[in-house]
Image (cartoon, rainbow, N blue to C red; front, side):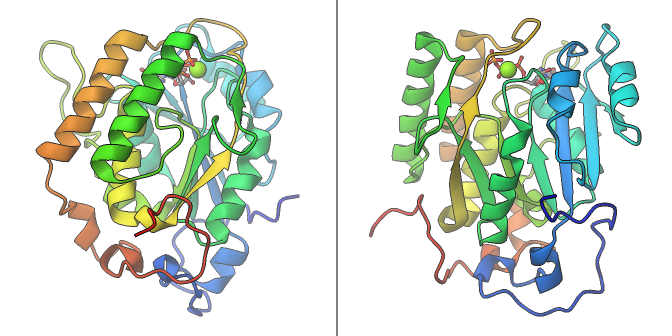
Length: 304
Ligand SMILES: Nc1nc2c(ncn2[C@@H]2O[C@H](COP(=O)(O)OP(=O)(O)OP(=O)(O)O)[C@@H](O)[C@H]2O)c(=O)[nH]1
Ligand SMILES: [Mg+2]
């Protein structure tokens, strides 16, 4: 339907090795760019009632659907398995949405990873737009509710104000042009993963039962900042319409999680080295070490 290539796994030592004209995907063969395989990662915490509404809109030809559960007690896993035969269920190793995503990403084998929520707020029918942006040269396709037709039917005035403040802080400190920092609907080439350098799923949970930094809702901010540092010119913002959660309660606390995001921003800016470990890994795409970029629209780049 969307030209995605189901079931051909991400390990591709073969391929044509013909290079794209887009610098950051030098290492990705033309056949992969033509028909990338898609892994979709869905973190869940008691979302059984919402899953039927989400899964029915997923493209049928995705390569892999990975559900990362945080110990749901409402039958989420059973419902998921009944709805999508072949779904891969991962139990997260610590607490929080960030840890769930890190565990899910580690399981992915597709060329492209898409992260969506399970509460019905992120529309799977938008996935092709994210994929097209990546095929067109973006390293990272970032959903935005606040630009070019994107909007939210759900956000409260408090969260909108908090998001704007955090968004502006990041744009000033990192010279980026994000329009929606805290939105969790994104997609990226799997080869970008080393740059994210997310907290290792194998690390033990803190003894006090808390979360490691990066394990909570600050994950989106962490990812956005690290991607912007490595791929500033190849982040593409994709308009997205956020709907209301269908059933159940939000797990996000605007003040508590907003403060975690703020601390993450300052920690990334002032204590974390710009030399991102993944940026020198041989598995990283070429643009990590060769930031030159040729010819694709680059909305997040500042005019110099
Ligand atoms: N596995 C796992 N999933 C989580 C956890 N916290 C949240 N999620 C999932 O992550 C997605 C987003 O969480 P929500 O609680 O909807 O939070 P949000 O979308 O940021 O906030 P709202 O706009 O209020 O919905 C949903 O699919 C949740 O089920 C967690 O600790 N573990
Ligand atoms: Mg939600």
